[in-house]
Length: 317
Ligand code: TXA
Ligand code: MG
View 1: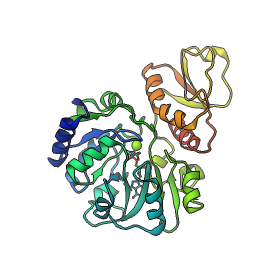
View 2: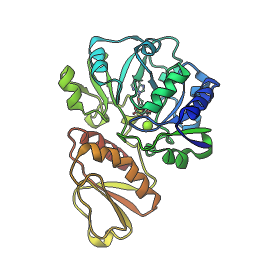
View 3: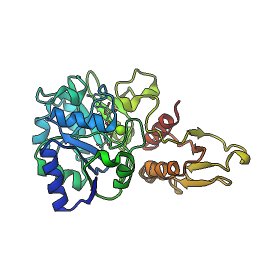
């Protein structure tokens, strides 16, 4: 595996690899993705192999611009267009009717396709260089912690990936928010754009995040996902001191005494900062191989909803 600083030469090399039917890991503003050309079913199949991802789990297709969007989606309903106008390029994924050219493996046989126009300059340069949409899930083994740095990708996927473009830490640090429109605007996954911001634009969303009890449509909605190897639990109150010595603590605004290690997501209680640190800190605490991680409960409003969602799934058994 080569981890390459994402300069022009590295991006050209990664684009050539994609063009030749290989997979490449690359940074986006949310998390690192493991990509393949979306029209190339064999290349996309490699993503599933590398991640050990079940093929019932559809991928997000990344596009550079609206011209590329037109090669992926058959139609964009007015409310979707409104959200695209407001939030793209950015951390919003829209589920739209797919074009026949998108192979079934990308969408797990669904007639819809999840599409996102990323803002990260490296992702955009890569899309421009391959001149084709890139299907890319997060670059982690299925069900595990999402990668927010090239080092996370190297540590988790190692020799399974030829090229990792290193664009530094993913600035948002949490996955995109997913919205579907058929038959009505519906939140499928909490993410880096707060539900409130989307509702301010198009009005109330139906809620199909699994937290609402609806049947899961997306594996990000599976009860257990985003999990570290170390057992993790969400705590409302600190356990007795004797139970802290061989555990780690993930605080929201403050730490706790007596733990073997701890991280604080955002001392100032800023949800954006907390989201940006979430996976980074979970990777760090997980690497310590302690008995347990105790995570403080994060208030579930704004981006806190996405953080609370990831912690709930990471701790589900
Ligand atoms: O921020 C992100 O969205 C990152 C970066 C790399 O773009 N990608 C990401 O991909 O989080 P992934 O595969 O980890 O999550 C994609 C989610 C899955 O839960 C999948 O089931 C859902 O999107 N999804 C994909 N296509 C769908 C569709 N047609 N209908 C409903 N959900 C879909
Ligand atoms: Mg993922």
